[in-house]
Amino acid sequence: MLADCHMHTPLCGHARGETTEYVRAAAERGIDLITVTCHVPMPNEGFGQRGIRMRAEQLGEYRSMVSEAQELGREVGVTVLCGIEAEVFPRESELVAMDRILAEQQFDYVLGSLHHPMPVYRSLLHSEGVHAQDAIVRRYFEDLAAGAESGRYHSLAHPDLIRIYGTVDPFDPVEYEDEIRRFLERVRDAGVSLEVNTSGLTKELYEIHPAPVIIQWAAELGVSFTLGSDAHGPHSVGQFFEDAVRLLGQSGVQQYRYYRNGEAVISDLPLVEAGRP
Ligand SMILES: [Zn+2]
Ligand SMILES: [Zn+2]
Image 1: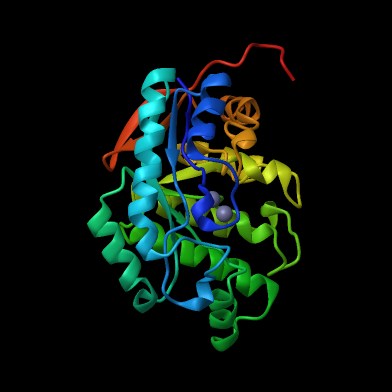
Image 2: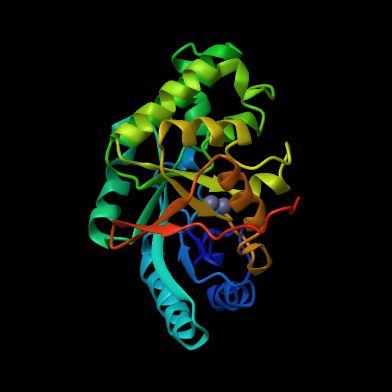
């Protein structure tokens, strides 16, 4: 059984296609379960507003879109769950409104993302004098680990996003092996999963998030995984899942997770045929 637990809706303003089209795409590609995880509303402009995320007043509409998708899912054999892509941020005061939404909505699944290019994060780094490449990379993994320990999130989305989008120069994760392993231990000890996000294969480094070597370290340390395409259009649902499954298998991982009503459900990874590239 395959679950794609990261995808968007037109409400965020930068994704295309009706949620029902994502369901049809999942059915065509043999994806058994999808979790819709659009970007959570955030009142502070520094997190990006128009074109980045829905407004709090649109949460009702979001729920109806997912309900409609669930109805179609029942017809075509795809389970549809309602999640959210929430923000990880090191200042709790910025997360009060988001926490209220998470408490009220009781989503099946809460993804935690630290979108480091957001003006609010870059200005925080600036105001705290975090300028050097090394210091920024360490700080990013520190903030993400603290996010895992906050208890808000079930899984951390695209965990090595800091490697792209220009906050720092591209780097090889091996240069930060100690820091990243410590981060992974904290994620594991917090009981939080790590997302294997296949959208990385369409972006700057054309590499899966997190990089294969980080998947290997996480597997060695016993971190649990979730799978997400981060689809912003129906054509991307389940994109490159065979690569994700193969990479996990090569790292000795046999199971992954999805979340329903906030509870982890453990599922066997499909076997990739031997000899396939
Ligand atoms: Zn997005
Ligand atoms: Zn996303």
